[in-house]
Image (cartoon, rainbow, N blue to C red; front, side):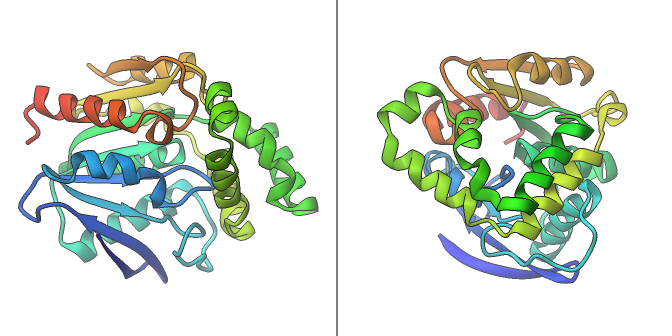
Length: 266
């Protein structure tokens, strides 16, 4: 895996490319408060067959924060800018949580570039205005760490947290080390973003996946978005929280691979 950086929309975007250059292109977009390392085990399972691109959205990981006002369009255009920089077209997009909204923005604005869409633990609209404002104000007052334990309960199932305390602590550290400007900016993007009108216009094959124990985007929320998208399919992963790429990466990789094969996207 080669770690690289691209100049995109007035900042720098940290990314990696893995797998055969002539393989089908699979782009993985990660969730709020994480960096692209959450996909590592999924990449390991799929990189023999796919040209995989992972990246840190602005304000996260090793990418720049930038000076622009955050919204879903900015995050979506960052991904489009990265694809332009890499010269990639006809990609399969897989987005987790806010990464799923970013992927939906790309499909809505440049549908000709997307062959298939995988939405993990996400929806066309996440949360409500007051909820996001409460989170923003808490972080402004006391930093991201004040919400660290509560967010772990939303991210990871009770079984995972009980049986894998070291990994849970590590992912909490990943969360709290996210830049405050990038985290709050992305909360604003989620607060103000609403792609429900666009969901019904998605025309590419779409798979929606959700963990049964997801407290951030519960299965009913994800299923409701699947119902908005013509011909979308829905898969429930039993016993898993908001981040199936961490709890059951092999199963998620199998679901992705099966979806791509069944829809002739290879």
